[in-house]
Image (cartoon, helix red, strand yellow):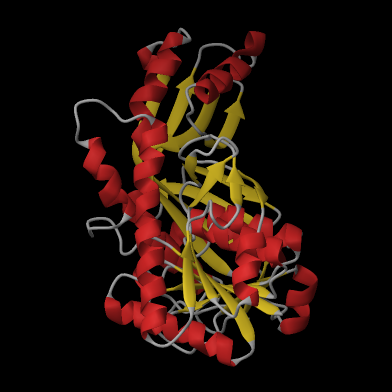
Length: 413
């Protein structure tokens, strides 16, 4: 039995026409000899009736905040509704189909409500239906704990569902359908000349996803990478082949990467604030650094882009946690004049495994942004990316400048 996982995002199942288009992709897979397992997100996006954010809004407006357990119950409904509607759509065009919740599909999680982790997958029930010749439609984004609690997997959870089921079922691949034609060299809404990449490695797509590219969730890629499961990201609304995500050794055989190209794409994150702590004595004194970052971690405040100088610490946080971070820092005895917070920042990142060990890439990035009139507040680099903190008002200039300077609009591979 050749099993394929087909995951459809919210914009692929939002309307009857879109659902029928998605259903035709499933029928096509069957015609090619595959046994499809379909994973669906909630229908539409924020503001639409069955989108996750809309359902959560039903209880957010009440005088008392709902317990995380009840929030998960509400949030799981969008995907369940979507699974039922998609099942009926498939039946309406003559396909035998059955819908399952995440728990019914055997996805077992911990009880970290709102952002649970998959502990194990028991795919027996799904396999039974596949042997009967049925298409199995699974509600993404959710699972069930060993105590029977309904749980959700956090943002991008439907991607994670698809990857976990794919590994457990021994699928040939996972197809993730979206509203763009694959992994793009930049956000096409910002850079109209952005192109889809033919092939990317697991490590490159994880880097892109962590740095702001929204095509696939990094946790899903990590699961697929561990299981050796190829992912193909493609558009629901075209026949373009999309982007193959696979091991770097396979990726290098599938396409010839131009030797003069060190970058594969430009990603960005917005709504960031820079925090600068200026002290009159060494910030490393008496474990001060550890106290700062431990206190922020205890308050569930994530930090990024950390720079440490003898009398200064710089790091970034989400704008949404500025007040909480300020309270934490003041509780450590820092004076208001020692805490400088700059909201309205963004991070732009150049991504590509080809930049490893190549001299002059950082110089080219800095010069490009300088020529575009973009002020850089901080930088960081890894083996596969270079990131710069800039003002959010400059993110369009920064993204377009880097995309052009590194030749990403000419050809993709």
